[in-house]
Image (tube, rainbow, N blue to C red):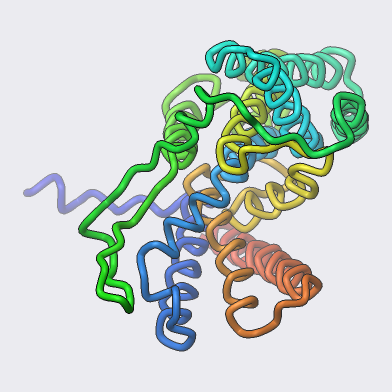
Amino acid sequence: MNRSNNKQKEPLTDTQLLMGITIGIFFVMYIAAMIFLRGGFLHSQQLFDLLNDNASLIIVSCGLTIVMIGGGIDISVGAVTSLVVMSCVLYLNKGGSVLVSILLALSIGLAFGAVHGFLVSYLEIQPFIVTLAGMFFARGMTTILSIDPQKVSHEGFKSLQDIKIEIDWLGYTAKNGNHIPARMELGVVVALLCVAVVFIILRYTRTGRGFYAMGGNQTSSLMLGINVKRTRFSSYLLSGLLSGISGYVFMMHTGAGNATNAAGMEMNAIASSIIGGTLLTGGVGNVIGTLFGTLTLTTIKKIVVSSGLNDPWWQSITTGGMLCFFILLQSIVLRRREKSKKSA
């Protein structure tokens, strides 16, 4: 008898199921936009522009996913990103080196992550309060550094910023007959690498399994021998590090710093994680789902603008509606799944 025929197919986990729903909705939405709205959606550059414009958001959302899987929250990521941008712009304009500016960005992110992680994990202060204080502190420090917009004038950084990856066969022919290749910024490569690294950490490392266990049930985690305090500290440290990377990628995209940079990024990152299948209660989530959650969130905004609704409040309304829809969908799917498990 063939042993493989006797093996029953393992059911999808909650994480895989919610991720699959998000990916399916994204492709249905994008294909519908190609059919009914046409325009830029027919060109591959539109998809690359989604990645180019939101590479920093993808990176920050990866950090939020880690923290939320562990049952926490970090609302300081947008402010930390803004502080990193302004600090690096001013440093480069004073003649600093590109390498040291990268280290500066990582150091700022790690410093915030370490402080947040220590206060939440070892002093057991509520993460919302801790990261709210971190958000105000980072915003205040950004304003102290400069209240006026600052543009990067460093030639070495400009050379780095000008690097574009051209994919000729994915390009399109313009109305004047010229062939325009698809262009992807260096920040997108960094973002996709961050997604890959976080995926490996969550899927294949003991620390990643600790995040899921801690978010699912902290008491059970302690019984399994997981060092909950150290694991929680690691989640905030990783979130801070990714915020530092996000800040530098943001600067590479805009080439400038402003006190209002990345305003609202933390809310978009939380929304991207939730749409991607990460539960606020913890224990469920996948960074691949977060990537598609970010793309879904930004695609619906593009669809709203392409439909002629250019007023900014329409984007806020559709974002709120989509978020409510995904939260309701998650609740229905998981409740039915739980009932089927009990009946089985």
